[in-house]
Picture 1: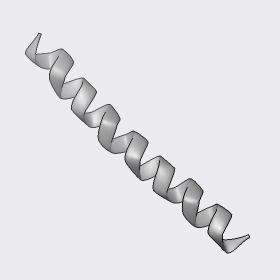
Picture 2: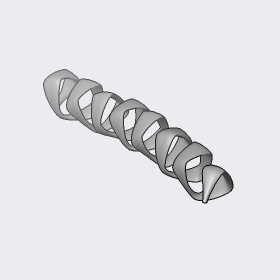
Picture 3: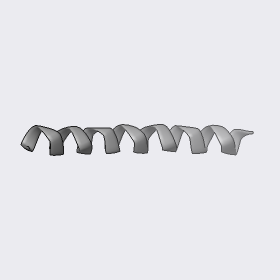
Picture 4: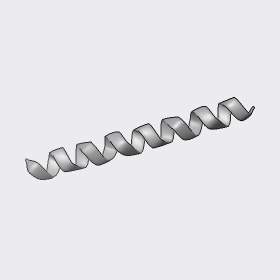
Length: 29
């Protein structure tokens, strides 16, 4: 159970980082 929560939190962090990069890339365009 703890591993599942940790994995979900890790995925959320990765998605947020990717989303931030995508937003920066879109702003450049």
